[in-house]
Length: 109
Length: 279
Image (tube, rainbow over all chains, first blue to last red):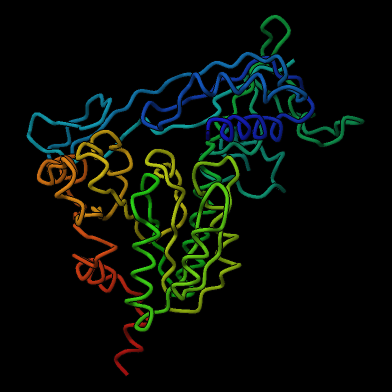
């Protein structure tokens, strides 16, 4: 399952940027539309962090809501999927947010 | 110069990729550029100030995890453009008929165009064997536990396949209607293949995949008399999540509807091939 690979890449990216410091907390943003299950990332994190500088660190997952902008009238609204619907009648949308997958910040000793 | 804080401490570093932070940021910070002494110039030594919260410090990273994949995908795209070669990313649930459609396409179009295939499966080279027997060069990627292909895998496979100029590369992604949609490979177009044995509500249940695709192929039309599949409802659902994508109704085993598929491919064919044919 790919939450495992994603969790491993979170740990690798933090280690690459933080170096030798001990990490006590990691804050990540996961967009609601990424089809990544936060609880699965949480599940993998403790296991994957063992033996790294992130061992024992707390993982905070910030879920970013989906927002879509109608290509017909420009109206922007919250979007949970699967089908966006605009009051103007258009079904044609650009996604503004909800696809994020990023490490926002860490706390280190 | 660092784009976030303006410091020139890391001026010798390569330019930061958009969406990534070249070095961790602590705020407020001062930059006295005196030598660091024994701590040297490794990255951890540059975290020299920050605010304390019970002994720990916050470091803002803003690292986009998909940025690396997208970078490699763009590199693949450039590599393919340099060879005037088009890559198509074929995605579907397991068992929709991707490999059968490719076997048929190779047999029917192999004389007219240069075709190559990159196969993605968790394990085994069964699909690659079928493609080889159909007569096209093929590279098999085994992802192990991975549920999708990513740009790095594709880059390596492309270099191994080494397609000649003005050819097509069909990428048969891992059978999965969820994850492959998230990963740009560097393809020219995305094709999602569904089949009448799967239920007409697939486009709305797996909207992300259908929205991300340029073409929808509805396969196994020969089985329509034996299943309860409402084609019109499938078309409505598909159009509602993706008004732009055409839906082709085909039977890869019997050949029904494949002329429309071949026409769609011909419309996108590499431009050098077009000019070669005109000579």
